Image (cartoon, rainbow over all chains, first blue to last red; front, side, top):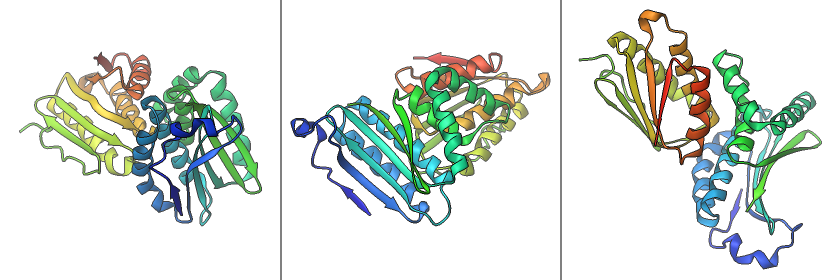
Length: 169
Length: 126
């Protein structure tokens, strides 16, 4: 399922949005994760067409990394949902996938550590990679904070986890 | 013919590599597919083997036009730096990355890589 309106720039309708109101620009759900690969090009083009260059780069990075993590860690035969939305002041990228509770606890611990000091965590992760102890999902999350200057959060709904990256428009 | 010149180039949408003997490699495009190591890890390993086989003291890797990579692709560069850092003195060489400081992933990644493998990596930033 794909819903997107490439002809409506979110910048054109700022006055219609309140700070709390979220306008969904793109929402895509897969039941077969193999199809996600083709989505990267779409997100890249869409983000560049509707956001400033800086915001587009952030959206592209967050979309890539969150989707790759979801593909890596979602349980088999479960749906992955991607959403790109805006409020009056923020851009939000979120990805939802099925998971198990132990992974959620690990994810929350990662997010706390990353956001305490993204730069230091980035160095630590590359160092771990060089020693063969790297954690695949971690580097992507760190990049979202360190390179894209986005804020990460995670929420749980039943057997699903949603990871969201936000930044100012 | 040098071993480097004989390295087979990978086929990947939106990404290309060019080898210019005796000691230059250029990467262009983006690496955005999930798990790019499936396609590119053998290529990076072949580059490393060929540099040692040719007895080069240095290889220049131009990434200025590699505008985006995902974190899995960054690990390919990490692996390469690790191989060089761990190489025996007889097989050691330096990777000279030509980077564009305006591109965020290059600015953040290569400076950290260099700090982790200072004898293996030189950064020429434009």
